[in-house]
Amino acid sequence: MKILVTGAAGFIGMHTAARLLARGDEVVGVDNLNDYYDVSLKEARLAQLAPDPRFAFHRIDIADRYAMERLFASERPQRVIHLAAQAGVRYSLKNPHAYVDANLKGFMNILEGCRDHAVEHLVYASTSSVYGSNTTRPFSEHQNVDHPVSLYAATKKANELMAHAYSHLFRIPTTGLRFFTVYGPWGRPDMALFLFTRAMLEGRPISIFNHGKMVRDFTYVDDIVEGVLRVVDKPATPSAAYDPASPDPATSDAPYRVFNIGNSQPTPLMEYIVALEKASGIEAKKEFLPMQPGDVPATSADTSELDAWVGFKPDTPVDVGVARFYAWYMAHYGRQPA
Image 1: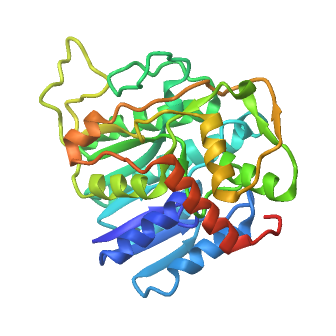
Image 2: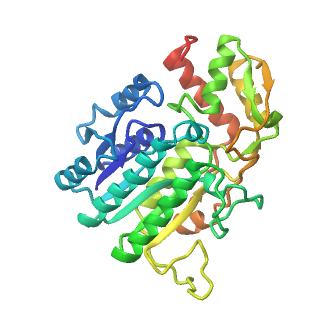
Image 3: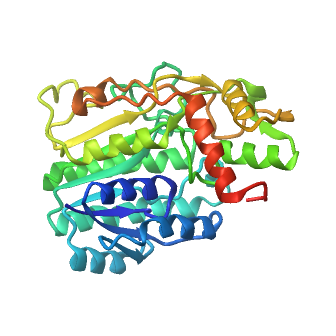
């Protein structure tokens, strides 16, 4: 197939594009290469994809309506995997307009492109952050997600609502994937594992929020990509279980689906750090700090709906995934600061 992957220079985007190319698909990659973090890392990711003749890259900002219209008209992808976004909970407190531009305007342009060019299936990244202040775990797609605690989460919830409207009005199959704390090689420098590794190699203390009382459903990037590929191959369909008299958030009479993708093995942050200490042979100096605004103390994914839909459940153990990340970091950066 010919598949458009937005955010192709990003962490998950690069891995997804590589897997699509490896199985024989043609990939149209889009990214604006902004400076939210080190552009050279994004360029290095793209360099992993560039040698494949079936990969075509366009440097475009998805918020640029006319550039996106031209892209859809010229490339005419059969399916779209939309991973481009302004990410990060904490940064949304500092630069909220970036989230409106990328996550709302950008997503609108993706939806219109799919509408105008009869795209067979749109798969897009949502986030576990949509569960917000919910304390009932594991998080399930059947739960209400109307209480986000960050603007980032609110924009991702908005994406799910926008997608549903287009699925209902124009019968475009859309599937949202709520990613749970993705980590692994080529990860973003603002992610905890990257920050911890860099600080430990430099002999600096690592910042541990909520005084270490954090639990995350850490999900290895290869598991995320496997889920994305299986889902893109199975377009959303209306749910036979949908009852308009008692609407369930996980069902719809439109060709619309939303799934959790998480490891379903919630891990205390301190155990995650121990896995990095073992992989690196370095004992971390620890600075315990209060909870940050917009953050939540724990996440945990119920992935039974995803398993029932595509027969897949992420299962990479944290110690294995962390060791792979550390090996990549040392190969890519050595002991030099990133």
